[in-house]
Image 1 (cartoon, rainbow, N blue to C red):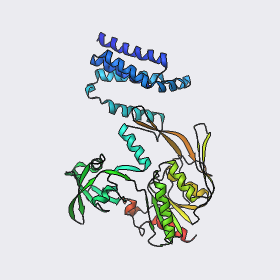
Image 2 (image 1 turned 135 degrees about the horizontal axis):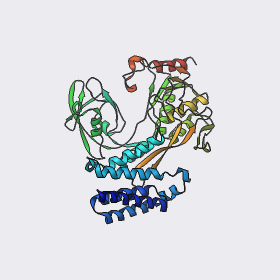
Image 3 (image 1 turned 90 degrees about the horizontal axis):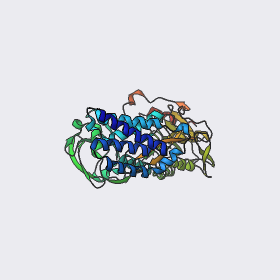
Image 4 (image 1 turned 30 degrees about the horizontal axis):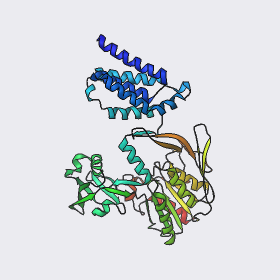
Length: 433
């Protein structure tokens, strides 16, 4: 026991010495963890060298931390974490089963929760790569939107994206996926089924499909594809009104959006409904792009930092789309979708119909960390052109209409124009405008 105590005090002393000497953050963590593991594995010298190499890798972060005001440096946190890590690795009955990767993930996201950043998140290397791909509008997979089929407890295909691997494989809207690579979806569960459909580019997945009461087997080859985020049609009860549903804002969305608007106007539509329900937002640049297309010359959005300083103002160029417009919203309309909604209303270009939006007027920055993992953190507020910022408040519609209770368990892809009471109210308002 005495030997064990002396080892623990030696490790803590080394960590403390490093803090005093360089005021480090990541370097402290690297040295603390490596020294602890070194003692437990009886390979102190080799691990210490590795730890010092890690300290050099993070030297730039150390310098930045040392530049913070003294009252903002939390050395106690690093010492506390090093002690916790030491005790658990030494005495915890399941200490041999500790996963460094899982522990790092939980600690990082615990820190983010601790500072209260509701929209922050830590990503593993693979998760960060997927995040970047989503923002760019390019994905690897088969290219479908799905939901759980209540009757079969399996995966229902809501729509198949254009030019996607799923389309090439012959998968159709309405298909029920009951098996994946020989496994029953009902047995492995909905979310595990989605995990198994995902995979690396060039690999294949075998899907057992239930279609019109018969089972067929289709094979799809996972590949890169452009995410289809914009869907449009003429309103079934009044074909002079075009309906454009936007699922998210990414870098490929503006081109799809402009094509939808121009196609509907060319096909005789004289007013437009933009369906932003369940649109969680996306990139600011894509929202600015489509608002520039719709709005007259003037401010679109301005961003501010934590001290309220204006960092950047985005403006619309001359030229706009001049037809009556409406925007459909719900409690899941957030972020860039809220900016889109509020900016159109600020310029009196659109009425807002539905329910109050989520209330996210903050902006996240995405940073790649040294090992390829990533961090999303809230760094700015972005503000609509004329209205107050809606962060934490949401946007109240001009015409408040709850979705009919009979439709609550349906996905928006499955709701017809004739059933959709919120869409009907928006179209009625446009027709009477």
